[in-house]
Every structure is written in C-alpha cells, then in structure tokens.
Image 1 (cartoon, rainbow, N blue to C red):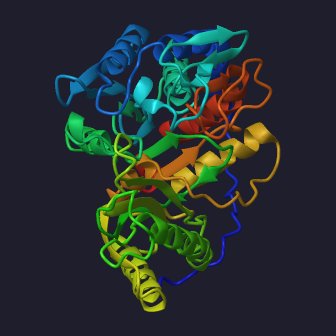
Image 2: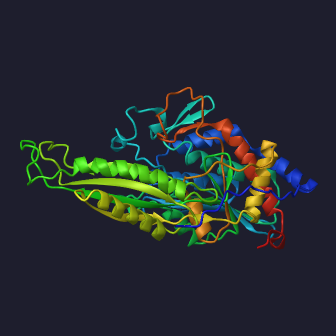
Image 3: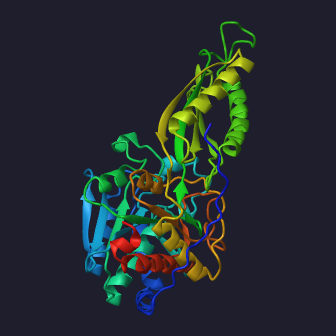
Length: 449
C-alpha cells in the first residue's frame, strides 16, 4: 500500500509583474477575441475526430496556426491520424513553454454510440457543430475542442500583439488523449500521440495542459483496466433450475459486481493521496448472444477502470485487485472466475514548488482576485500524467465545467462532452497568458532550468 500524504496547502510565491511584463500581458489580452475563438471552436467541432482518425481536424488546426504566423506542422502518424506542433521562437536564452491539449473525441459519432451513450440524440452527441448565441454544441466541443480553440486563440493573440519574448512558445495537439484503446485504428489511445510528439522534436522545459475544472493541478492519476470473467456452462432455457450439468455465469456475475462496487469505494478512500482521489467504476458487462436468448452464456465479462495515484505503481494496483479477487473467492467458493489486467498507465506528479506550478497559481490569483485555495480532489486522467512521467514539469489549468444554463437539451452525465459556453473560456485564456508572459520573459537561470 502506498504512503498516504495529506493534501498540501498551496503557498504561492509572490512575484509581481514588472511594468514591462504588465504591458506585455495587457497587449496580448487586448488581442484575445471571444468571437474568433467561438468561430474556431465551431469550425473544429464540425470536423469529426474520433481517436485514431484526427487527420482532418489536426490539419485544419495546423493551418490555422500557420496563418496566424507560427511555424506550424502537421505530424502524421498514419494515413488517418496525426498531431500538430507549432512554434513561436523568442529572442533566445529563455525556456520553452508548451501549451497543450488533446484533439480526439471519446465517442465514434455514429450509431455504434447508442444506446450506450444515452437514449437521446442530443446536440452534444452529434459529430457536427451547432451554434446558439454564445454556445457551441457538438461531440467534443467542450472536451477537447474548447481547449484546442482557446490555445489557438492565445497563440494568435500573442503574434498579433507584437510582443517579443525571450523564450520559445510551443503549441501542441495530439491524438490519443482519450483513455480508450481502438484496435481497429492501430490501437490508438492512451497518450500514443503525445509520445509520438515528444519523440519527434517536441522538447519543452515546462508545459501547461488545458483541461476542464477551474483549478491548478500539479499531478494527475494513472489508470488500470481490468476484465473479470465469470464462468459457467452454455445452457438452454428449456431446462429446469438445479440441473447439475448447468451453471449460470450471469447470476453469479451480479454478486461479483456488488462486491466490486463496495471494494472500489474502499480502494479510493484508502489510496487518496496529495491532490488525487483514485476513483474506480465498472464500465460494462458482456455475455452471450442477443440473437440467441434461449441459450444462457458460459461466460460473463465485467470491465472496469481503477485510477492510480502518482505514489503508487500499476503493479501495486494490480496486487490490490488480486487481493480483492482472492478474498472474494474465499467467501464465494461456488463462483468460478478469472481476471486479468488489460491496460495500465502510471500517474504523474510535478513538484508543487516548481516554477510552472507557481506561475500558473499566480495567474489564477491575478484573474480570480483571491488567494489560491486547495482544489477539490482529482480523479480524471489526462496526457498531463505522461508529460510529467517523461520529465516535463506540467501544470493543468481549466475553466468551470460542465457549463450550466444550456438553452439546448444535452445528454445526462458527461454525454458527448459537447456543450460549451464560450465566455466561460476567456478567464482561463487570461490565466494562461499570465503564465506565458511570466515564464517566457525570463532567462533560463531565473527559471531554474
């Protein structure tokens, strides 16, 4: 079991802007255009980009950044997908700061999403954009495409402002940010695009990943994917109960699910550490043939994801799950089951005293007008974990999410993560600009790199 540490009360180190830095910040912010951001978001949302098939969306964004005046390139990974890397170089002697967001959506945007995504075809689930006032709807319009559009707007405003920086600005967007695995498209997902970018020329000193929630996070969890298979025998609906030749796999699976649900709550409480509460959820159950309801299935599979705090390895999480299975078997000797870990990714953390964490917290304070508080515990996993694991100090920043007050009906729960109220994005843009100016107007020595 990992050592549990109490949440840290942030102490933001004060470092006020000089008059020159304040003037630069004001010039860039004056060029931020909410209307232009909204149009970029609409256009990007209208380009369908499921994991493993982001080529059109990525090429569109690479072109937008090139038109804005950055050195921009589409980085292909296959014929159907690729990433974006753009740069605005400074005068020299400074650090490189990466502004990053994923670009792929978590659903396919077709009939295969239903009924699993919900009973209704609401606007936030559609693979096409719809604009109503300051709202933009469509699959992924808030996560990830609102982040992509906001970062594009920040980079565009920086170029238009004419501000000269010391350090270099990198802008990166990658496929595979969604915690999925798509075998049909080269096993896309689980940060594969980010690894591609970092292995092919992207080498930042610091990174800011934009994701939902109006906080600064210096760490994010990993994840472990498990499959439990409850075994029985192939049966027939015409036989009586109690027949020794038949054992149901479906009914015992319900007992496994109930036990798992209780264990997952205890697991999260037991492994809460730092900024992370590593929740876990049962995602689905599979068994049998819908077209053969007369023949009960010989196997019922249960799929689940448990999150892993950064002070815990996937191997430790696997060992905890194995202990749960052993205990269940002891208490339920009549249930025949097997299990395996089918996916994993470790969490990642950045020293909360690192420059980029302190800078983003100062930006948060400047815009919110209050001392930075301790954020709510986090369970969501992003490419930020991979950035940190690969040696890039990374801060996660965001905006209030999900948006409230939608004039259009949207799916219950997370749905298509596709309803964005554009004015909500602008304070986050100002916070990121603050950290950008704070970081890229200094020498490497001042930043400790």
